Each structure stands twice: as structure tokens, then as C-alpha cells.
Length: 368
Image 1: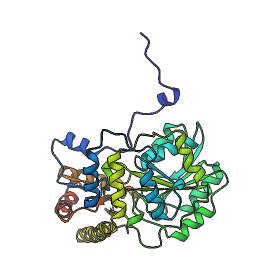
Image 2: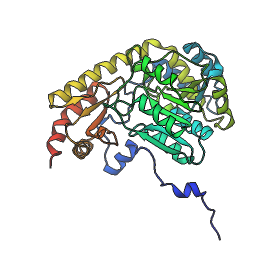
Image 3: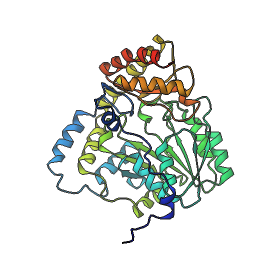
Image 4: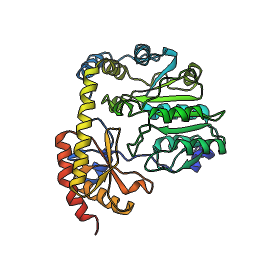
């Protein structure tokens, strides 16, 4: 019997995933992690109101979620001072990026990003046949001017930038991003990933510009709101850009439990402020731990800190491996020179203390 044949594009791609999950690493090692500090999760957890709302919604999980996410979209619109038509809710930013790429990128279409930036975006571009063009980081920051210049050169359909950035945690002030928006080439769409914006300093996020069809912004409940496992993200953009998602999105992809939790989390500003305070404290603690071990950190506007291990990527990988052996799950950037760093999520005091205890041992093992 003749087997079905993959498309030529699918045949050309490696079978890969952008990230190996911590659960897979635990299965490989045969033991659980002591401190899970590698996935940029918010270990301080979601709002108690969100937990209560999700528990209540669990009894109604026999029903599909509202395919229009009507209540959540309206609440988000009011929160941002835009219309519901400017909001699209989806199963995390990752899924929204996949739908966006599907809408705009065909075989051979040019897409611009930074070398070493969020790899899931690149995964989607490859999956739909796009051609990635990359520019280097500058001083551990994504470089808006280089991204725009490359987009003009290659006539890019999409331009991706995260502000604040993952994996380095650095950020640009709103006026820098506003200039980038003003410089978007004709025919390009700027994808502004703001997954960490709630943890950034005042003046990082530009004002809403939902009349601009060349700009789309991505937000999430996975980070500051502590709901990574619920998979709730949303896009903000011009109504015509947002409406296009309805052509190809999974209309019943949003679980009603997740929608209820996100709606309750959005209303609990006190819990968000609590989490923001905990993250600031944890960032300072991680910075001090690095200094105590003769290392420096990259200034961060996120819920993680990149620690410069002081040598090259090979050394940092040995430090990472030693930490994993010691039960401390952290990650690191993939591309030089950023791969001289390890990336440590802001955890609870107990988790950060476990990292502090393990880091000197890992550094001692790394030179061998």
C-alpha cells in the first residue's frame, strides 16, 4: 500500500521543536527539578480570583468556549482604550504568531528578525515557507534601525521585535519603538511582541495606534498574570488586520476555563502589583547572587535575568549543564555572543536560594 506523502515544504523541514520542555529534561534525568527557573514562568502564580473563576468554570467545561471570546475581548478593549474589533484572543502568543505568519507569509516571502531572538516565530516562518533574514543584536539589544534597514532591503512582509526582549531581558524606551513604527517600510507589518511589558519600566510601551495597519502588538497572560498553562494571548491592531485572523484561526481553540481565568486576572490589579513587586525583588536577588560569584548581569525589564558567565558560549553551556545536574532548571540564549549568558527566571525565595547554592558548584565544574 502506498503511504501518503508529505508536501515538499514539510519534507524539507527537520522534525524539531523550538524548546525542549522541562518535563522532558526531568524524564531524561530521572528526577524532578529542585528549582524550575528556565521557562520564564511566573512562579508567584495567578490571581486568587483567577483561580476561583477557573474552578467555577470547570463545572461548565462540557461546553465549548465562546469562539468570539466576547467578554474577554470587551474587557481587554476597555483596559487598553480601544474597540473590541481591535482585539483578537488566541491560544497564547505562539499560536497567534502562527496564524499571523499563515496569513501573510508564503513560499519565499521575506521576513526579518534578530539573530537569536524568540525562536518560535522563526519556526512558524519556516513552516509556511518564508525566508528568514536576520540582523545581529547590538549591545545585547535588538536593533530597531538594523531591522528596518534589512526589511527595506529584502522587502519583508513581517518584521519581528520583542520589547522587552527574550532572551536577554533588555528593552527600548517608547520613543525608540515609536521611531521604528514611523519607519516601517510600505508593505511590511511590524510584529511588536510585548509579552513582558507589564514588568517593564514606565515609558516602555508606546501609545496604542490601532489606526495603523502596518503594526500589530502581541500580549499575554502567561507572564505577569501567571497563567502560562492556560494559554491565553491576544493581539492588538487595526480592525482590518485583526479581522483577517477569522479567516484561518481555530475558532474553538480557547478553553472556557482559560477565558474565565483571564477575565478575572485582568480585573485584579492588586495581585498584578504584588507580582510586579516580587519580580523586582527577585531580579535584585539574582543580580546579587551573580555578583557574589564574580559575575555580572544584563539589566532586565522581564521576569528573568541573563547572567554573563564571563567567557564564551561553551563555558556557559558547561555551567548550564552542571546546574541541570544539580536539579536547577535554567536556559541560555542560543546565538553568540549572547550565549555567554545563562538565563534565570525570577522564582520564589526558596527557588532562588536553591540556585544560589548550586551556582558556585556549577562554576567550579565548568572549566573542566
